Image (cartoon, rainbow, N blue to C red; front, side, top):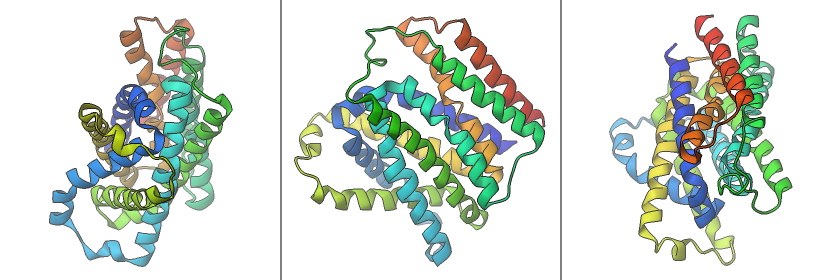
Length: 294
């Protein structure tokens, strides 16, 4: 049960971060924003890691699992996320992100043999279907900045699907390693690996304007704060949930972020989501209820 609650909490955290980050991502760029928030997390979580570090994280199998999860889930996956967010906005990005539900369930059965029960699968289906209905039929404001498509929409679409697949693979890779490790340290090592690799890759990027953009101190610190909330708090909650629950169900519950975005967008834009969006959100709540009670 604690894993399910934490998965829902992670989704709530990510929904607020996604809405807050859209304009910041468009200011810094997808790659720069991702790097900036990772560096912030490395610094902020360092005291906990120093106190609780254990040599087990140098175990070859555990380190390889964390390394691959970091590269696929953070470097590639989160770069896809911000490319999609920058081009399509938070609503469409959330819709594509929900594809991680079927991806994770299928991969978990193939590699971990952890298929949920029939009742739980029905709950997962209701959540997935409810998310699609709620996001697809959500009424939008045509000229709203959060809804405008910027750049090539097909690149955004490919990035969104790639994001969902990378997140699913990252979750599957992490599950075995979490059996004997501290989820917070695992989350930190993933971030540290990603931050080092992205920092080193800066030398291969031409005309990168990160230092110039960082002159806006307010936006820089805001990016670090959003990174702390999204990756530091949200992802740590997800990893703790994954340690204590079925990866398919945890992935499904953490994908309810789009449903949580709808009321926030309603408040921010003063635009009613529409009856079908409310019906979709209700289906998702029913699905989550079935999972909690099963």
